[in-house]
Length: 308
Image (cartoon, rainbow, N blue to C red; front, side, top):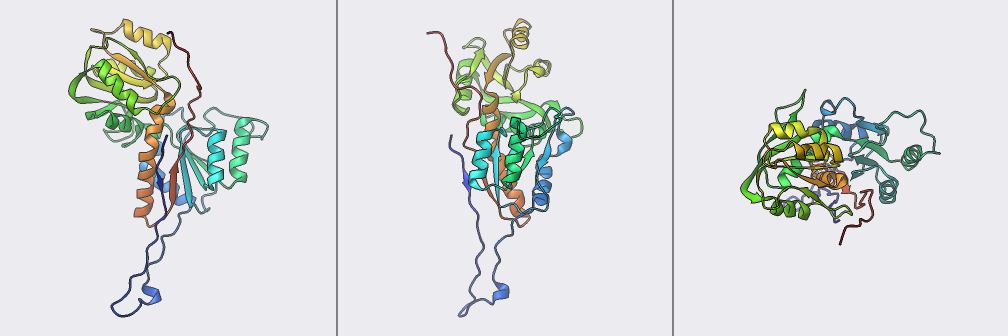
């Protein structure tokens, strides 16, 4: 997977006609933000108020007064991503998934979570999580999916309790033209990053679809909202056997059809737009920072066996 890298830029002094510009008139390079400045920018983009009650988002490790020159975005705070961050010299790692979603009683280095925190702290790299707030916000995970599939007139599947009308979990909208399930599934497959599990589809390949519901990450708790929105097809990840089976049994004219994609892949697409958005907010505030998107595929599966 190729990921963009945004380099630092520096303003240069302009020469006055016929003579050098005075030193006090020369443009100065943009300053690097403090971690606290980045936290304010992140809150502007992905407010913590949009996070689900069960979620754990925000700063996990790091001192707000520390300078930040390099930021790495990733889906998962796993060891190979931490290796990448430390080898690059990142001052901040922003991940979609939390490291400490479930309560812990120790962060000793004897366990993999404690070891991850120790390595980050000892390497001078802070850790920040934008999870369900990154899902719900405008320009969040599901918005990126909806845009990638070409959906128009999108609205949230489940509106945020304390957000704007366009904020919430999942999105539903329309394709510009009617297509078949098979053709739409091929589009989804072409957009997703390559992972072992591929893309699974339930429904008539020649069935016609136009109204599409999407939810990045695990979305089989939203079948009620999908049916209420009369979606022809639902694209999400981690569709478990029983919810998917019940959705098919309760389908009307076979709909909603189901497309099950990689949890990692559905959220990885968000990283590049998120990195660009954060860089723009910081630049508007006069800060210079180098931001990268992780090149590590952290989907947990390595290979798959299929009949035939």
